[in-house]
Length: 358
Image 1 (cartoon, rainbow, N blue to C red):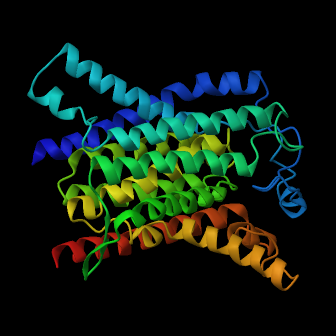
Image 2 (image 1 turned 45 degrees about the vertical axis):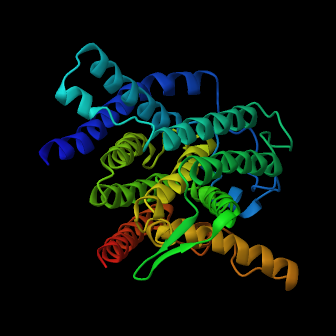
């Protein structure tokens, strides 16, 4: 229906313009209060990263963190604007545009805001040099524990509230895994969160996440989950606003307040488009988010090799920094990752929709 198409794309456009509009205000305060890293970057465990710091020494300093506020702030304001308009001017069209509801979008919206606010705290502490390690910020253990708690809330909602205990297999069927759905949900969310370290090059993370959410918008729309499709496109619109200012030279970095919220929300959206609605959303996640997948795998391979062989497989992990280390310009890494993201998103969408049809 035409109204469904309008519902999916009009909020996305609103989110984009809201994001562009709030960025000058955010930038002013980020630069005014010098919200950037005061020391070299550290890895997720708080260890120094000399190769990364050498590669990025010319432009890493004095560029603020917390740019992810543009993304979740735009989504929040867009949801608020549409809800407010529907209440003040009730009608068929305004009510239809309101995509926030208990059955489809409460959980991903809650996940986005909570994850982003926790990431914001981590970014603030790191910018001020306060925290659990020399560079500041929350330790990896604390962040993983927080993500684990959020995953339990999500798993409870699916397993108890929605009665979901199954996972869909493309071209095959649905497999009921019973109570194992809870640890499986937590494992997926923790893994997707770990992929947030892809936020290390101007424009890279934004393009990858935008492609993934666009893919799930298509899947949700095909499965008649119009509110989820609208929510995903709103995130895409907000990310595009962020990318407008994040392309080299970046005005700010997405950092934890963006990557944590987006990664956790992506995991929730994948489950919402899966067996819950006889869809195929979860097992195509590694394909749709292929750059995130290889980011996690490259870290796992590097750490495992260092522990077992006492040798590194990559000059630096994750993989996108390895490409920088061997001489690729950062913009080339970003653009090629964007291309790969789009191609694998299309492949994942085709598999999900074909499996659904079969």
